[in-house]
Length: 55
Length: 249
Image 1 (spheres, rainbow over the protein chains, first blue to last red):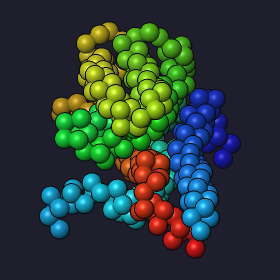
Image 2: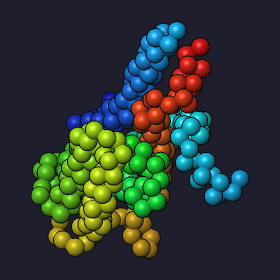
Image 3: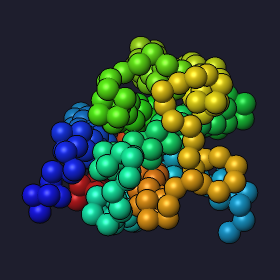
Image 4: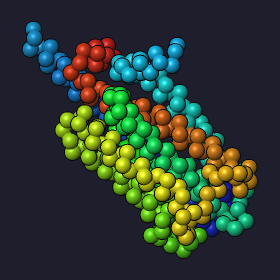
């Protein structure tokens, strides 16, 4: 296991590469999900306000 | 269902939104599964390289990321072309949704290239043709994002973005052929060349699995962003209000 983590002496280059790939994948998922939640809340808030005024 | 009818229906925001919502979980699921298989295969089972030792395992990230950086750019430019020439509104939505994902994969290609270059070439960076043209690609993506953000009217912004994206297409063959046209530290193409790829199958397979995983991941996330873009653009329309109110119940 420690030999695997050692990556033949290149651990300091190999693991950051995979780590950064993970960070970028997670960012690409969280980003649009958070934006979706924000947008939905904003549109619903506005629709409810408009609905109240109409009554 | 005829292909013509399919494209006609996908041009309707409401229909696109719904169908994209059905595809996203499957695309994401398949992509993450392939990613785990590809990475485990690449990190554990692929043999150590006789020249580069284990440092070459960075390739399983670096090469798919670099392919994606160019593939996403072509999708963005082609969608832009559809929106400019045939006024396909969905083309605008896809084009602007491509840019942040493309920028992030380009950054990944550049950073992993640096991390691979340091132990193999002895330097993080050189101003050679391949590296410089890939850096220009990153700036093109940033330019597209900034330009779209700077223009208030979304339709005008999307048109400007489409033109910029199309002009930037000239950079794509430069990136691809840079390793042939100029003397460079970067190694020439191993896979995307005519004839047999000069790589053993035990290394090629995890590379291709990883590349497919990234591609499916891009399709999933570009649809997620396109759905948001549609909500934003159509926020005052009935279909958006009906949809969100139905979901909220």
